[in-house]
Length: 325
Ligand SMILES: NC(=O)C[C@H](N)C(=O)O
Image 1 (cartoon, rainbow, N blue to C red):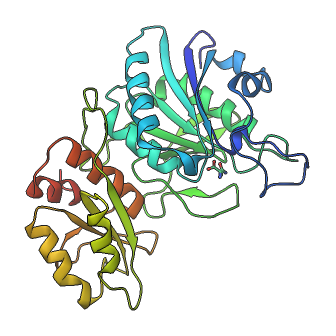
Image 2: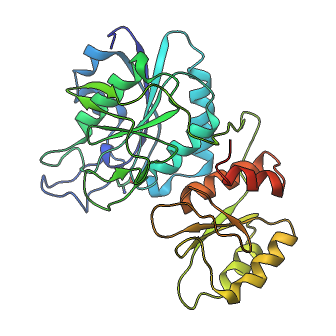
């Protein structure tokens, strides 16, 4: 890393900015309390790896992240990366929905420069807080040429993941971010990123231009289980949903009694994506609706919303989810 490389940190809150009166509190603290200046001041080593500036874009626990803030973040980053003095950007974010924001940025920011999304599992006030090291590693990564051309990256727990595949797999532990099948792209040795492979693009990854977009169509996620019926699917449509994602059982299966409804919605031009509640794997099953491919329910929602926003028809949406080139 070159200490002269410009890295801009956009802070949005989360546990990395979390604080509690007790140093042993790692579960009931307030996320999104500390400002970006406090986070930067806590890690003077940042100046050894980059020329860092910070901007407070939001300050919230990530369960409150919304499409308005996402759009603002994406547009701000796209613009900022055009500045030749900026080598890369870092986004500090709560971990609960970090994968959604990271995936959104991966699909909407078109740049070879690194975009690194980082969080923490322990608040800044905790014994063994992971935030300061995670932030230092994220900035070191954003300042490094080897991070170029890899899309949006996720950093936590000394590891580098691809935003396209990485998901939160554990509710409380620091080693929660994984791509169960696809693995990591690299890790940190000290604070230096070490990649396992040269840059690659995930199969089927597409860019969505949201620069002229004001908002995104509403897509809801419904969880499948024994005894599920169509009541909430119908309610979602009544409530204004333009698309539905079902967190299906296994390989995207849904109860037989819901299939007529799914078929009707598809015929009306309302896409229904069948994903899986299992946490990993491909949904291939050919039945009513569209199989989500490798996308989990929350990533499917982001992808479907972007597809609808950019006017994709049903066949195009099917292609987006098929993971085809
Ligand atoms: N570890 C965390 O960041 C969790 C927190 N609830 C958040 O997502 O903002």
